[in-house]
Structures are given as C-alpha cells and as structure tokens.
Image 1: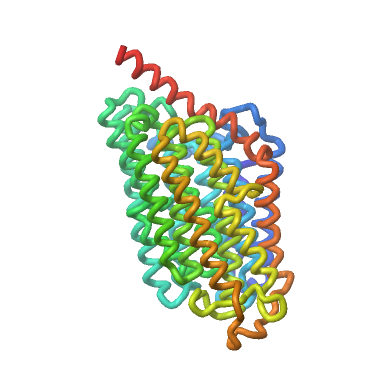
Image 2: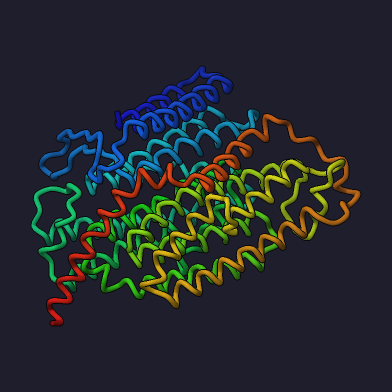
Length: 495
C-alpha cells in the first residue's frame, strides 16, 4: 500500500520524460497521479488504526544487506497527515501551473519526482533510506527553480543547492555516527540506539542532526536561502516549497532528533526553546520590513516554523500534538497565500506593496482574491475558527508549563503577525486604485478553485480539528514517553 506513493509517481515521471509525449498529456498524467496519491492517502487514513501508536501498513524487503540497509516503509500518526498534505499540495501545484509553460514534459516529471521523494522520506523506517529520499528531492527542486524561476533564479537555485547539500552531509554524518558508535549492524530506525552511548556523544550527534534540519526548516541564522528561493520560484514551486518541503525539516526534528535522542534532547531543550524565540521574532520583524508580498509570506514561514521548535522543545503531549497540527496548518495556509500572491502577480504584473492599491475594489479589482487573502491572513495570524488558531493554541498551551517566558515571547510574536499582514492588506487591497491598475484581467473560476478548496479545508480543520488530532494523538503520546523515563532517571540520580 505504501510503495505506491513512491513508485507510481516515479513511473509516471519516466513516462512523461519520453519523447513524443504532448504537453497536454504530460500535464494530464501529472495531475491524475498527484490527485490519485492524495485520494490513496485519504483511503489509508480511513484504514488507519487511531489507537495504535506503532508503525502501520509496514513493508519490509532486504535491500543492501552487506551495508545493513533495508527497504522498510511504514506510516504512523506523525507521517500520515504530512503524506496527505503532500498529495493535496502537489495536486494544487500541478493544477495551478500555466498550461503554456515551456518544456512541460520535464517540468511535470520533476514535480512527480519531488512528490515521490517527499513521500518516501515520510514513510522510510531505515535511516539511510530516509537519507536517500531526503536527498532525492534536492535535484528536482533545484531544477524547478533554476529553469522556471525569475530573473535571479540561478543564484537562488545555487544557494538552495549549497545549503541543502550541507544539510544532507550533516545528516549522513549523524546517522553514520549513531550506527557506528552504538555498534548496530543495520540502519533500521531504533529508538533505543542512543541509550548505549555516553551523554556527551548523544549531545554531539543530536547537535549535528539539529543543524541539518535547522537548515531545511529553516531556522535563523540558516534561513537566508528561503526568501531568495521563494521570490525567484514560480508560484506552484513556492506552494510545494513552503507547504511540503519545509516539513521535511520539522518532521526530521521530531522523528530523528526527539525520537532517537530523548536524553540529550532533555538537556538541550531550554536552548532549543530560546532558539525558537529568536527565529520567531526575527521572522516577524523581517516580515514587517518587506515591501514584496512574496517575501512577506516567506519570512512569515520562518516565524511559524519557530513555533514547532518551541513545541518540540517542551515535548509535552499537548505541545507535540500542536507541532503536528502546526505543520499541517502552515502547509495549507502558506500554500493558499502563495497561490493568491501568484494570481495577483499574474494579473497586475507586480508584488510591490508600494505600487499595489485598492485590489479589493469590487468593480475594477480582484474582490474574490482579496476576500480569500483576508481569510488566509486571518488563519496565519491565528484567528479563532481557523486551523492556524488550533495549532498555535496547542503549541502555546503545551509549552507554557515548561517554558513560560519563551512561550510568552512567541505569543507576542503572534500578535505581530497580525501587524504585518494587516499592513499588507491595507496597502495592497484598500484605498483608491491607481489608474494604471484599473480594469485588471478577470480571474477565472478555474483559477480560483484551488484557493477556494484550501480555504475551505482551513476553516473545516479550524472548526473540527478532532479529525486530525484523533489520528495523531496516540503517536504523539508515545513520542513523549521516553522523555518521561529520562526525567524519572534524572530525578532518581538527584535524590
């Protein structure tokens, strides 16, 4: 059941690369496969045992036995929501791609390979298998930015490539160190591997993993590749980059940081919470200073990723649940915002807040797009009734008892989120429209459909978060149990 998420997109990409395939057929096959993977993930969620915290639907096949590598896939409450998100946003990205794009066979094939790599990373239960899928998305995304990006696309793509390559090297070093120092004969995911290591070795390996995923998330000061990549990437690629690719970092943080090194994690947790505050506040203040709509949304992502680090540092059952919900809600909200910014740029030719004005004008502007933007901004600012509110409330509620000062500072940053998004709305959508912007091309309903679907899902999950929480609760509770054991051991040593 799980191999389909990896190999069907790969096979479809190979078919799309074949000479003689028409642009229309390559788009059709990419859209069909992406939507099929989304539907298949929903079917998987229906069969998922919500009270079972273990890996489900496992597939285990020996692969490179001499190196201890196995083809081992599985899904649990942490990876399932992200698998669904990957299918949904890939479908939105393919659908939102302009049909007249150049080199369509190559473009749609790369998106399918990207989808396969991300799905494989979320499903892998072998450390080196995860690393291979983690690196698999590097080249497709680099090419998607370098070929179909903006004027500075080569610079942004190369910067992304260098940062992500360093992330992969650090991750490989940490995995090799963990297996080598523990004396294990395989790279199978085993939460007890680090228990035989001295605490100093655990901390060194955990720091290496933290640096690797901090680049991918990204956290300050490893964030500088993200705004450049977003600004130069096309709208569909920005949707995938913010909505799905960044989640590889937060997922890895929880799965391989917290999951493999609970003792070292408890030692570093206060520093991680402080790091979260720095990243959140920097993202907020940087977003306030922007005049490019896309850069504003990009810096907002840096801030919102910091909430996940705070929740992971606290590592309470409630905060870990909040981290999962935040990953999903941010994927949906950022996907919606980048989609709307793309429509605005396509119709006006500008993202500059100093030039745009009055776009909410019901006669000459983009009223539907503006209304959806208001909804997306409200969701990102954590207004009740939206998925963003549920995520942030759980993150802060679960973290406050452990790190009250850091939580207060992050809550303050949430208020500032409303500030920069209200500034964006006020400057771009209200006021008198300039004559140069009058009589904008109309937005077809076919262009609005993806944004409407994302907006509806954001509201539904805000009103009924139990549909998501129920499938992740058992897993997040199980993730916290090793930390409780560590606390008991520390208490006994002190006594």
